[in-house]
Image (cartoon, rainbow over all chains, first blue to last red; front, side):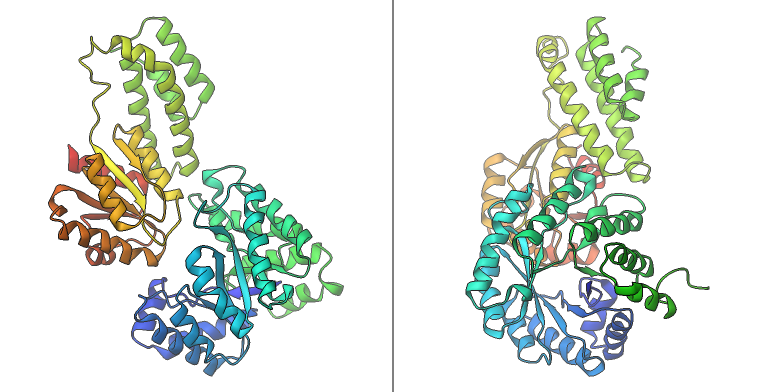
Length: 269
Length: 216
């Protein structure tokens, strides 16, 4: 499972403040704790206005790289901010994200191709938004994967996000995501499949219970990456157990290592 | 007005089938359609209250919306026939609300729920979709004669397009003609004053209450 740690996001109040005040220690700590908890990539989202974003992104990238060599996932729709960050990253990053929206196709995709980065592809566009069927989402995914491959990216550099809509607004919404995950896994066996899982529980009580259950069900149908909070030990426990139960954890070592390191399970045993 | 307590309870408790059969049986008994309609409205208000208390959640809002729609279809011919007698009160809308997700944002869940709740509460609602440019929002709002413009957005990217709607309203000298309400998970006092909106809300039920307060 490839974990993309989501916490360095300027739309979260404390992080937004740290960015404005250039609180280096806060950002370093946030980066480090996510890496220690098992993140493979760190999402970086400045969440600021377009004029400030390039400077803020550069500061974030440089600050994070002073404390960890984990690769970054540059999360922006702003070509200027992305370009500034791309010129400073040490390891090949992911770009989050390209969708069928014109602005992202024209502004973001060329940068991913030029810098040969990994790329998250979202199954939505500006004509229909998020399609309400698996077939509709696959139509967009096919188009985007085609563009990325034609532009020189390997299938294994692609992270398809089939998208998750709230179960509270449609009781079949999770099923659409499972079907889409299966369809992507079949059509593009080398591509990764990632998701922002927590949308599923929007508008419902006990969200973490829903998120955990949904994660294990997505893993069963082929999810192999998640954009999530790696410090959520309950969620990480479910993730490791689900992968193990899908035969993807040789001699159960990921699971038992995490247990021995005290990263999963109740805190005081 | 007839005592329709069992209907009220059925709707509030999400008993779809019971509510439906009670609606039919009250109509058969000759209970005025407007009384039944008002009972549904009262039930809806109670459901809204429970939502605010976090006893009910979005699925209950949507389900009550469905029940309202079904009942409205059944009641419509009776309401029309009885309208002369009731002084046209069923036709009277509380006010006009134009709602859109602003340019650059395509999230529609919050907007759709808000539009539904407003309609159910007796507002005349025009929903012009997602990713709508400021000029179009203003043009449509003026053509519609909106009392309130509801701007929805989930992303922080939505702040500037929201601000642009307010600024363009000012430029055109229209700012005093409409109230502007912004809605979305990221909205707060600070965003509201940045955008220059009249108020912000984080959920649909609060939004309905705000607009009721303005237009009553």
